[in-house]
Image 1: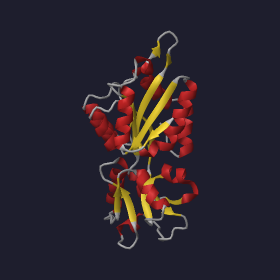
Image 2: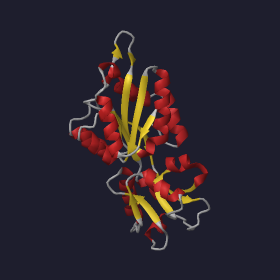
Image 3: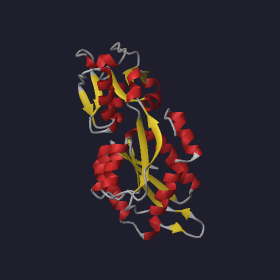
Image 4: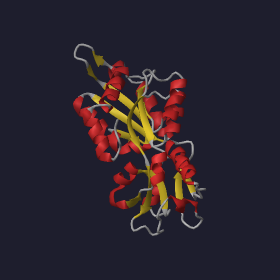
Length: 258
């Protein structure tokens, strides 16, 4: 399974896949088995879980190859609406999915498969002595949050409003993984990421829960795309994401499942 980094690389690669022969998106109608390549655009916070699920899907469907492109949900939605030949879209928020629905690029009703909430990530040892969300309103600590147009940034704005905090971030990043990287490298004293990202980082960072996170729970919808090059595999992959084994993968990663 391949992970495509960057918008340009994602578009070039999936464009190449779209030009492959008919065998690359074929379905054995008699057996109900899918084959070929299924291209999945997914929110950055799904990197670990969808990489795992992609491998599992390939094992369950020999002959299928899952190609994933991870990034900010807003950027992925724009790529889809611009004609990127993807099969499935999994967004970290309903708002970005709704953009794709409104553009006519969804072939089935989006369905929520997990939810997530924010957590403060700090470098190991917490050198900035961060204690809670109020520290994001101080000028002293070096702070990172997501850009407001991506789901983690929109969630951050909600928790800041709920707590009466006026944030003073030093950087606003394109997606949640970019914020996490800043924390891991010690470039900032704290970053607002999802609790699943803190868990995925292991001992590279420490997590600090804060009560206001309950005010901004993100729900993640998924749907097959209307112009999917491999519609059969797209439908099958979406169904797999809602399955019991997939729910266990999400739960193990710290997501809440419906």
